[in-house]
Image (tube, rainbow, N blue to C red):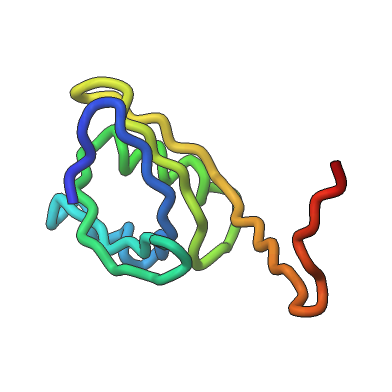
Length: 98
């Protein structure tokens, strides 16, 4: 999967897969689309890999969630992100009071 300029994607990346990225020019990432995990080969370059490593530096996490935005042809903005799950109880009803 190649990101176009202006495109943003939220993915989970494992540290082990990131270590192999420079040799293959891609990293295996988990993309969550409508709650379903989809494993994709995310095309990388030096800038993207360097930005992802900045998040992993100084900790021993095995994986992390990232929001990756392609700002220009060679520049990527990589930020750690989080997932918020909001589940509605079966007993609750969506009723509006006007």
